[in-house]
Length: 196
Image (cartoon, rainbow, N blue to C red; front, side, top):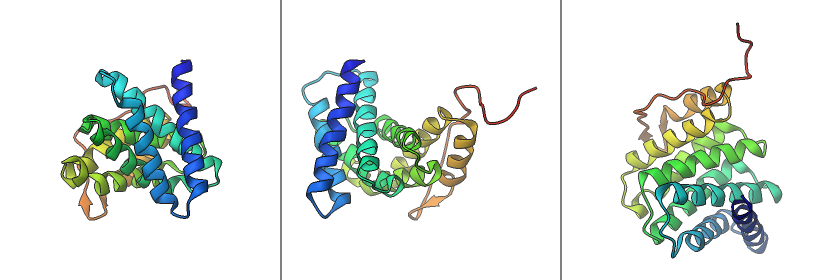
């Protein structure tokens, strides 16, 4: 657990410094996310579960950094995704699963710092579309993987968050028709409405 906290903190500190040091906040977020993820994944023989955990921690730290410096988490979601895709590509770990894990972490991290889950999810899908070609995917593949991840992340928050994200990501985003092939339900009991 200490190692997980350490990566989140390391990422957050790196991104805060990068954002404060430049005028191009979006570029700083992309570069810092990518660099931190490369550092975390390089040289590891991480299983897919371990790689997913490293991606999640890096993305979570980035989102926390954006919030710490007063940035717009929803707007930064796209840059976070581009950085995560670029970082996983550089170490040969780019996959649909990495796209999905990144998007889930963006949505959950955004919710944890008070961001709008629907707008954050849309930004994550937009970022996946922007970064798709760089990782050898079609825009449709990346968009669908990101939307699935966003739905998974939202389902871990609440049924209300899941509904908000579903409303956003099942439409055309950045000119790409997003296709969801899985069904999603909240993964924990909802506290959104009374039962019985």
